[in-house]
Length: 371
Ligand SMILES: Nc1ncnc2c1ncn2[C@@H]1O[C@H](COP(=O)(O)OP(=O)(O)OP(=O)(O)O)[C@@H](O)[C@H]1O
Image 1 (tube, rainbow, N blue to C red):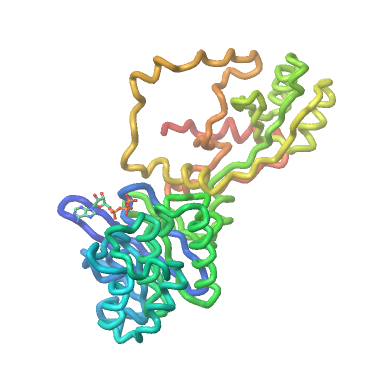
Image 2 (cartoon, rainbow, N blue to C red; image 1 turned 30 degrees about the vertical axis):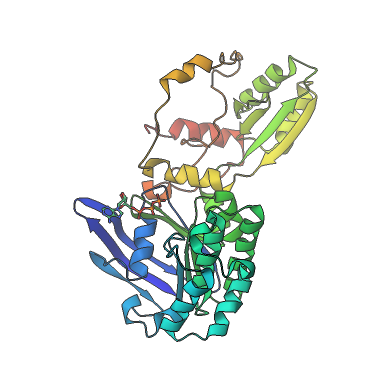
């Protein structure tokens, strides 16, 4: 198990990691998420004794890394796949690490086979592709057959087959009872790989919970409903009926409507009563990416501005229908009473009200969001 308590790292005036406390438990793949510059690598370096905390501490199986007897046998890590001497052959690189740690030579060939680099074992690493470098880094981490594994962006540069392989490897290592801590910016991949998430922003803990729980707490589900394309007035009639019934309706780019505040059977009944034929009515469950974007939107350090030249190719906005003077549906659920503010901001998880009246009164009571 990895345990951080009040872990803090300052570089001059910059606080890279701020009072982080968390546990990474064995038997799970724990994803470590956060925007660029949020302190993930710094945290991993402190776990591995490569950086000293300014305050607080972090232990692996109860010991600071530097006090672990024969650390290579307890902890394996991939931090930077490029941190390899380019003039060395892959096997020689692994062999030198094995010899330093008292690991038998046959283990080198075992891990080369595990990561699929047998045929490249005698190639110099300077000729390696990004993906081959990642595989070699993973082989290095596995060398001591450790109980605790840390991977910083392990799928970076891997092709789809490689990504699938890493996912299965992580899950297998966790199923063997190991502690697996992995950072990644690939949300779709994390959703499939990690069963637990630790999310940080600007060095602070934003969430420490199961992946499914994280998605449920940080996103609002909605229904997608689309009137028949052959009935041009149907969409307006449907929008009007749904809005009158207390639903909140936004346009999707493909002409469908995004509806919150009404259950699917009610939407179906309202469409029927309005005489609108439907071509689609589907529940939408938010993805990890949407939930993550919502949670971290206020903790993003590096944001781009609009390109002034963008207007050169910007299309005319859609004509707004009479029933809703809203813009098109956002790609990411927006802050407001339909989706919860991040827990770090003192918010509560969103719960779909059971009836439109409750939703309407919630709307009146909801404070204006100034973000
Ligand atoms: N050695 C250092 N000296 C000064 N500042 C540093 C140092 N290392 C990291 N930082 C700063 O600390 C903050 C956290 O950096 P860190 O690399 O840990 O973030 P990260 O979450 O791993 O980012 P990314 O996702 O981009 O890899 C950043 O603002 C970074 O500039």
